Structures are given as structure tokens and as C-alpha cells.
Image 1 (spheres, rainbow, N blue to C red):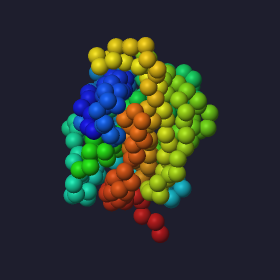
Image 2: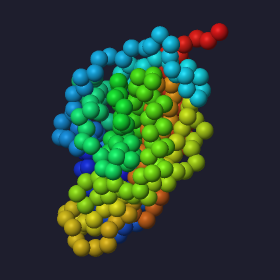
Image 3: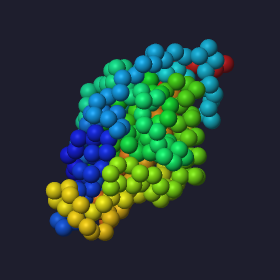
Length: 281
């Protein structure tokens, strides 16, 4: 089934779970994320304006597991690097227009996360973000012809030194974080690493479980047992870009981030990122 939501921080979780609970009575299947739009930074009602200056490439680019990382990609380069129905026939992609620099979240203004060990997972959960300042960002929704296939997909460009740290932080958080609050009546628990996709310069996959207070069709608490909904994440680094994929399940189901979506996006991103890598001799 598809979900139509306004993905304003915690609001999306409540709307999605309400839809999932309703679907339990009508035979609905799993969904990837549906038609969503980012309207604000996590925990706010309007975008947090970034005060960072445009990214510049260092004289000697940092080196990652797959060699030199390359330069930071621009907003327009991220837009052109996004996978489309040309690469994935039968899929549709939609969402907000290209974000400009004034609407990039300012990480320093985000609220602190407690426990601190859970901060990387919490930030990724609430907005496919990280503890490091992004330089460019765009998010779209990917839906296949099969209504049970889909995901939210975000590309985020970082400074060369910061990009590898995003996955390092997530790995560390998965080792020590056990549970964290997300919003009123919502907690996230049971971090579990999954087999990483063999894509990009490095990749990580994991699952979290959101535990939500039982609600009725109006979104009000009804005193029932908490609803447990698994969410799957796949995070891939290509140069200075982090591609994050997010799939939320309907109650009783386990949605998967489609591997063909990951492969197609990384392949297209590789073409763009390669133009920014330094030549080697």
C-alpha cells in the first residue's frame, strides 16, 4: 500500500503507523514510504538555515577504503545524479524540488540526542541526516509498479574529510546504542546490522524497530498493546556523497529496500562522482 504523508520530523511516524494499524484490518501489504515531502529540519517546523560557507576541495583529498575520495558535489550535481525512470523503467520518483543552500539543515542547531551513543542512528532515522554538516542535499520517493516496493532515498554531499565519518559513526552507534526516544509515544529500539550491499566505496545496512503507542483511526491513544514496526536502512558512500535508503514496514510485514534501486542509484552516482575524483598516476 502507498502512504501519503507530510514528512515533517516526527509527524511522519505517527501518520505512517496510523495507516499501518488501519491496514491490518483490510489486508494491506508492506510499503516503502509513499509520497512524502521534507518540510523542515528534524524537530522543527521550518528549515534550519545553514551558515556554513560553500565547500572547497583540499589540496590533497582524503583517502578512503577505495582510494581518493574526491571533491564535494554541488546541489545541481546531486540533482543530476539522482536515479530516474530512465535507469529504472516502471519506477516513479517524486518529491520536493532541488533544495538550495539556504535550506540545508544546520547540524549545530539540531537538538542533542540522549543517549549520545544513539545520536548517529537517531539523526539518520529522523531525517536521513548525520552528525556532520551537509553541503548539499536532496530527497525523493521511489515507488515501483509493484505497490509493495519502494523507499525514501536521499543523497547528501559532505566535505571530503566528513563523508567517511558518517558510516564510521553509524557503525559505532550500532555497537553501543540500544534504544532512544523519538517523539511523544514513540521509541526506537533493537538496532541490528544486516548484510551490507556490495555497492559504492563502502556500505552499511541495518534494521531498527519503532515502538509506538497504540492509536485509533483518529490518531489518539486507545490503550492497546504498543505497535512494533521494523524499518530497514541501507547507506552507501560514493566519494563524498552518502546515499541513504529508508523503508518502513506495515505492521506484521518486513519491507525491504529494493536492491535494484540501490544498484541503479549507485551506478548513476558513480558516473557523477567519478568526474570529481582526482586523477592518479
